[in-house]
Image 1 (spheres, one colour):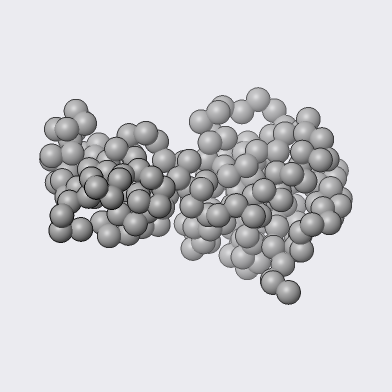
Image 2 (cartoon, one colour):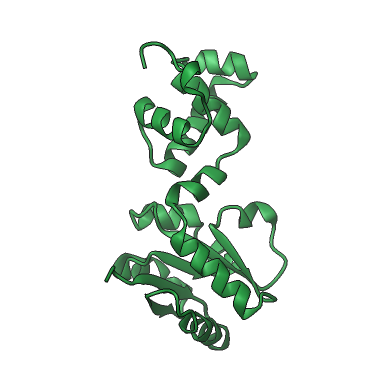
Length: 200
């Protein structure tokens, strides 16, 4: 039997936290362990100690202390999947930082479906979706061997902006070499094999 999926539910309200845990325990298709984080001040310590696979948290609460990207970085786990528990109106840009969103109005079946899909989803799928269209263009340029200055000229950007895009791409994908980006781009159909430089 494979190791259980570890799910952390970070929520200060015991009613909400308990309700989510009850629903999770009704998912018969997954083998997992759930642990609770009742105080947001304890989030970093709990994540480092428990090393969960999935973190379920209200973006409003999390936003006061950190972001999903920072949580992954501090936990040294870029595979950590973050689920937004949406109880109020939240900016869509904020929700895009999360791997999945569970709304207060979701049915038990919808919640089970989302958690099951998230547990079975390859890591690269969500990370790929988190890339902006401009970041994907930058990846293709890097693979073609273009310098930051050449990329800036081609995409009508400043060199500084190109460097920022490259830094964000590395942080999102945890890929730090042109060879790694090439493999990633081919797998995710960002570039055709025929478009690769001859020396690659």
